[in-house]
Amino acid sequence: MEQQAVKRKDRSSAIAVKAFGGKVVDNSILSKEEFIEKVRQSNDACKNGDFQLAIELYSETLLVDPQNCILYSNRSAAYLKTTQYEKALDDAIKARLLNPKWPKDFSAHDPIVAHRRRHARD
Image 1 (cartoon, rainbow, N blue to C red):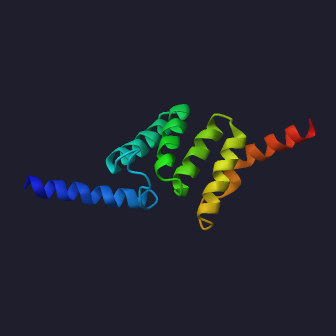
Image 2 (image 1 turned 45 degrees about the horizontal axis):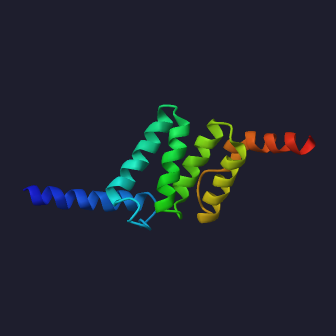
Image 3 (image 1 turned 30 degrees about the horizontal axis):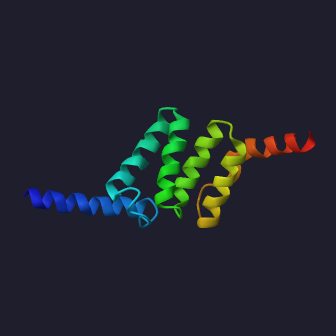
């Protein structure tokens, strides 16, 4: 019975890793379980309004899976909430380059465009 639970846990971890962008690139940084936990913590930090913590955690997960458009998109949103507009736009562009069919559009980044226009005139 206990062995079945372990197998089920491993299987769900693999499914979660796949859902978060495919394979984990560098297992020496984080195990699959640690990676999944960091992603959960990142998402929770965003939900709780702790965007700086979310940025730090998303950055750690991106070291493990740098091809993950979802992580870039989520970190972009956290940067946007902390008015770090250039970084938010950079991550939004990376997410779109990694997955051109990514459903999130740039309309959420209108403040970034306004910020750039304002500073271009200065």
